[in-house]
Length: 129
Image (cartoon, rainbow, N blue to C red; front, side, top):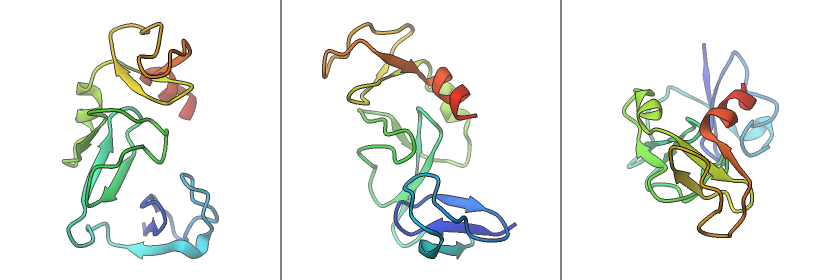
């Protein structure tokens, strides 16, 4: 199976042909290039601990291009093992400002914006399918 990398956001898709539209950033098929999966230059793979998206960049992203989560410690350098995702524990993402909070239960109020609407990592992954 071929791999196709979006040159806008770094998303990698698999298939015989490039996707018509990038699932992450919405760019068209013309921005996809075939890739062997190796990293470009000094880039690293970063794993979003909230949604499992793998992002290729030199430095850790500030926000996940897939789930739009942000916050300290939501990205780790990906080691080809998604067990890192399970080991991260329970997380909740604020539906207003997208800040991720590590907690055993719904935090009730976002420390950044004061909103009270959250989605758990497990709920988000179920909805994503």
